[in-house]
Length: 468
Image 1: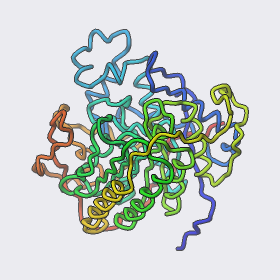
Image 2: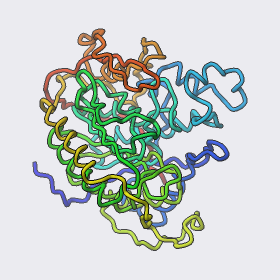
Image 3: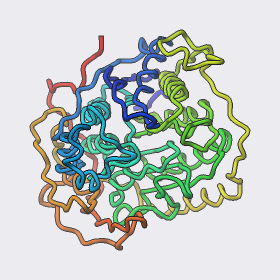
Image 4: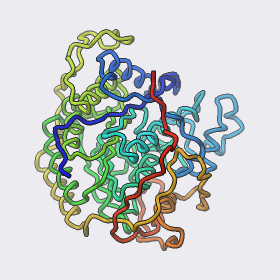
């Protein structure tokens, strides 16, 4: 069957009206209010008329423990601003307190953002949409048993685990200014997920994402990192993104794409140091659409909130193939966009420290890694496990030490027959984050090439409800 690249794509959009009510605290740069601003702006542009708009069901504790450890999730559910004094030891252990503060409704906030991404994945799995958008998600720093970088639950990992039930190969792309460390770590030892991150590197949070970090064991060369310097602009970004992604697509041949669109890579971001405009950022969405694969688009970082709302509204219009006016429509937060009240932003005159020589060197090294890929990996045919929405799977017991990260333990359990699981040896003693020097045990191996195609039973409950 030939796909018409010019055919209008079906877009599903996930939003919960409560998300903007959560507040990390005074002076904290992460403001969930930016998602409400985004939603309000795209409503006033009329973009909602061209999409199916859903309020997703919140993720349950059971769904979140498909990746996260039980004790960590139970801690997030229990901790409140008024009982902090009772949990000093656990707060330290789970890295909650400073960058990741305890605030009212913390667990509900995690449930909302994760619920949206799981719903998006379920919609893609059922072939009911071409592109699913959840600007509430994209919280890429959260670890199996640890909060990090303003992120508590990793909605991206949960969505990818859902996608792996139906798709052999998932490609994850991260254009946030920060390295997508939590997602890379979760799939570091598997060839079922390729992670590609373009990020600022060198004395910058989270300190991971070196060019030489390429995955381990079965996952070797399935993690790609493009370390960048300050001041990268639209033209330079396109010159690296397009050729790298073209080669990744040809080599890996994914079945589905997850694109994290963190807006802190934009010019003028409160915590950023890149010089991208909305057009440069949006070109990445535009380019990945050309491959005609199902895509999940997620939010992420972004700390100059008026520009975050501009960016994600614009990228929603890119997904919809709809031109929107540069003149902003009147909306509930109109005063935020002064003094110009325009959609598009101008780059600053900051110096671009990414020289052509430097970028070329990195690009050639990444191409070399891609040449080392044996072939597009596959997985043995087997019965597909129930969707996340069925609610009868129960909690997957995590027998690992919660202080050690076993990133693929859960994902392998979800995709392989029980008889194929075994306790694998540690491969290479790979130290991922030298500051914590935690060794990452390799996960179970993946299985030989075969196609996974099986339809789900009819009448299954949808993971979301259309918004009125």
